Image (tube, rainbow, N blue to C red):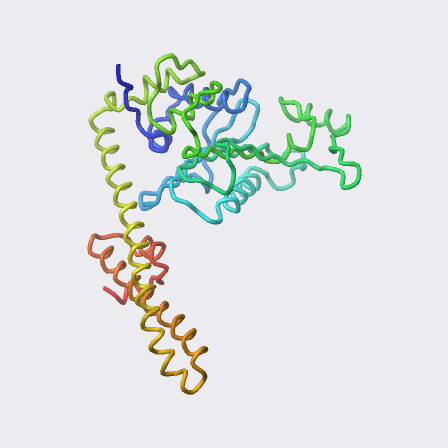
Length: 327
């Protein structure tokens, strides 16, 4: 019997899992990841998870408030970003500041857990699930700094969850890299990783919440309206992939052309400033000229299909003023 196809998790987060009736799916996912029973108290809104209709490039955030007052950011990212580590650090820091009222004691700083589900490989490493915490290690003694009994009592009074070390206070980061998962099920959370990667559930899976996900996220059980939205989502995904691929190919072609033209310019200018320096200047200027012309061509194509100026600016690195001049 073939596995039923489920909707992709990033679309489900934005369109289905915000419904309280589906909290059991998120609770199961988080419970298996964190190794403890998680109960969702509510979903929260912040500057980082507002839905935007013009946000073409897929970045979906869901902000969960647990029954123990922890804030959990769940994010699915499809496009590679060189500064991704910096962005998740900014996201947790911004969230802490948003939920700290002026005049509150620092003991009120919320515990934040960041969960990133990635469709690309981030950094160098062989595992597919990484956990990042903050600990303080002695420079000379190599021991780990712990909280005092008084500090433990303070947090026990302030929160319903016991904190025993600094890592319990600082943000915790989970990075799940789906491309590195070899489809070998070692524990129950691997069942969830399989679902995220393949959008399906194998027979015999029994992780918490996964059978509910199999039932509620079945593509065939979507309403006609939701099915139409889901089909449009995949059209956007394909369009984005084509844009990125076209952009990369045209930049490569422009670089080759620019290098050739740059050599000729360099030869001529080399009569005055030296052949070697002239060639290098020619290569650089030629690549820049070719790159700029390619970016303008991409912008023109995107304008023809009605894409917003700000999105074009993000893809091509042209300014909004340059894009308007192309119209």
